[in-house]
Length: 262
View 1: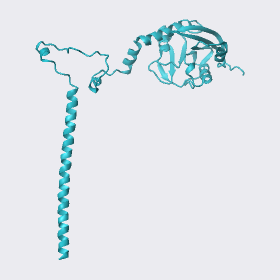
View 2: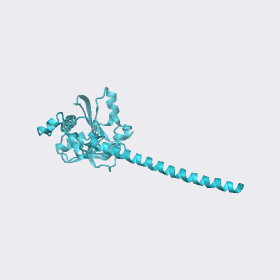
View 3: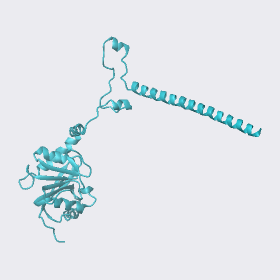
View 4: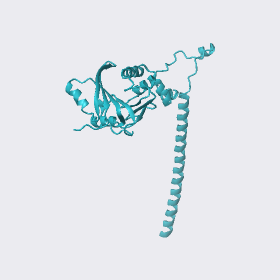
């Protein structure tokens, strides 16, 4: 008798488990259907929200196709749909847009005036092989190229194609004696000024020049400290100038090819 009761209890448990399993399956299907409908609604709403708004009845009646208050092209996007509708500029277009800006042009013109003052058959000419170190956005590279110097290489820690390529100014990826002139206005930002100058000297041929543009030294001692960074060069000229409203000094050094004894 007890055995029969146990068998009946087991049968009931099996039946209950099957009923619970069927219930859970139905609940899962219901939740899956709800989730699917929610996603469909979301996608449908997003696509509709990005669609252009219909014109007012009055505008349609008069055949007008333009909205009353069009947004200016330069305004900031107010939504993801607004941003998605804008043209994605290629790197070439972004660069062309930057070069056409007034601030970029003003800086490039300042470098053009500076290099014009360095023009001479023995220092800088159209045939010169020029290296610009810590060239930033390439203002000096563009200025040299526009003046007729065809062989100009610009480097910095961050590349700015097509004018500036990535390289460490403290470890330049060039052979010795390959450039006629090396120029930099980035000495103040160098982590290791002595190494920075040594790399400029290494890459410039004997008889070539290294030109540094620095903030005007406040004392003769500071100027001597800058000249002391050079181990293979002698001073040709220290020339004061003004660039973009800042007082600068150009140190023009001639590479002698041999290290100075300490």
